[in-house]
Image (cartoon, rainbow, N blue to C red; front, side, top):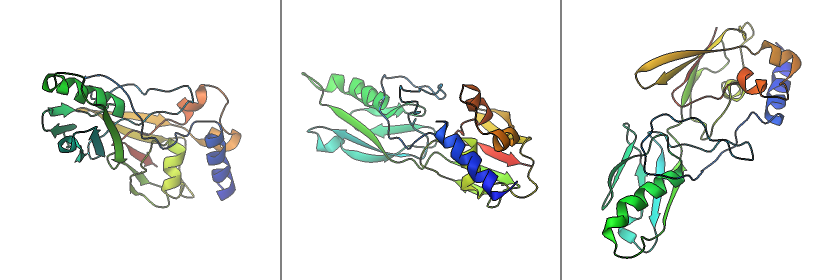
Length: 213
């Protein structure tokens, strides 16, 4: 594969809309899912869901004691005064806002002050690439990326990489699954302008290990 064909494929994938842009999104409800399907908004951009290791900022208007920066613990929870411990893994920032507001309801006679949650440092979204790439290792992109972008972060595939036998090892709780990906057709023909493009170039999830034989 030439450098030109690799760069052309990456550019085509991004133009086709399969690349996700950086996002400090916002979302809604006091629930505790550990794995949720991606929410795709009208713009086609996938909102960012909180991962263990992320640093979030909580701002409760008029309450300095509740304004703080919090690192999400490895178990996916955070803890705050008057709120207690809340599971935030897999939630959108606005869902965390609503969860905190619900916990504060009993602390106020009137309306609960407005709660704002933002992701300051999405350090929890990490993945690794091993095998025949130019710069294997672990990466923290700070945003969602697809498989082509992930390979680009690793310097692109090495000269004899088998792009039709890429494996994405994914953890889901205690279970481990493998997602197979084929990129040769993308290199030759570009990305189709339909839903099949997302299947050809899957999105990378936090904790994934990409194996390029």
